[in-house]
Every structure is written in structure tokens, then in C-alpha cells.
Length: 108
Length: 117
Image (cartoon, one colour):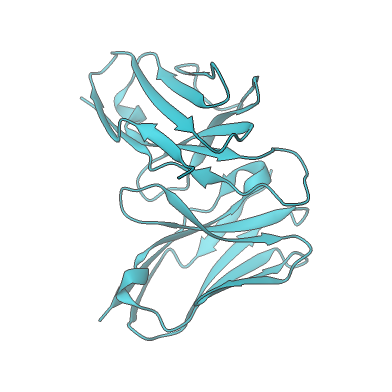
């Protein structure tokens, strides 16, 4: 059964840093992978969806890459801001399997 | 705006007292999901509907039931809530659950936080 792991579990950085969040999955036979943002006590907001045929997707300061062969995806956040503070989750939508998330804190 | 709506946002119930959480969607998606999320954990899929077809996850307790009377609405019934059922309950939709060219982006509601006293 598919397993999704996210490292690190928590990350604290000063404002302005570029950072990378990691997601790994055990079964590389995926159709796509999705990144979400979750603010405390709130639902999930979709950030990026990468199809299995794609290597990366970009939205503003966010860039997500996908390497199926190695079972990895990364979310790159450029020039981080305090408003980026949240938990970031990756998921394999078709199997509805989520990682536990990386809790990001960006301090001024 | 098209969206996924969950009511109520916060629900307090007593130990053993049945409770129903509701979800509605204006996206006209044919798949609706219910997830349970406990603090600092990954959302865990309880079940999903593909149109009227109900799909229960193997490890979902019998205490949890669901109803989907039409495309727009889906309910989560907890027959006898225990203290361990206190969690955030997330409803999500997607356009189709099988293989499709555009993929299965899931759209989430804001969640209902359940407290069991």
C-alpha cells in the first residue's frame, strides 16, 4: 500500500530564505501528486498538482517537482514570507493518501 | 463561487450521543470524500462516494456511516462518538475517481472540528 512521508516535520526559517520541502512515496505508479497548504484549524487549500507526465509545476513563488523513478517530490518556496507560515501536505490524490505535513514557520 | 461547504464549523457532542456532519458542493463533482484528521497527523480517508457507489476503507470503524442523498450533499454520521473520535473532519470532492487526463484534483471544505465531552 502506498505510503507518503514528509521530511522535515517542522521547519523554522527567517524571512527571505528560499526553502525546500520534501515528499517521498513508496509506489512510483502514481498518476499525479498534489501539494496542499493547511492553516491552523482550517481545511486544505490546493497549491499545485503535478501530472505523472510532468516534471514540475510553478505558481508564483512556488515550484513543485516530481521524480517518479525515485519516488520523490519537492516543493520549493522562493523568498519566504511570514504569510507562508502553515503546514504543507503532499498527497497522492487517486489513492487519497496524504503525508503528515511539514509545519513551516517564517519569522520576520 | 463554486465551493465545498461544511456545516457546522465546530460541533460539540456528548460521549455516545449520535452526531451528523454535513457537506455540500456546488462543483457538481461526482466523487465526495470524508477524511478524519487528528492533531499533527495526515488526513485519513474514511470513505468516499463515486456517484451513488459507496466505498468504505477497510479500517474505518463501524461507528462511522455516510449518506449521499444527491450529487450535492454528503453526510457523516457518527453513531456513538467516543473521546477518540474528537478530530477535524474534512470533506473533499473531485471530478472523477478513476484515470482521467486532467487528473483528480481534490477540493476541500473548511472542515468541521468535533469535540466529544
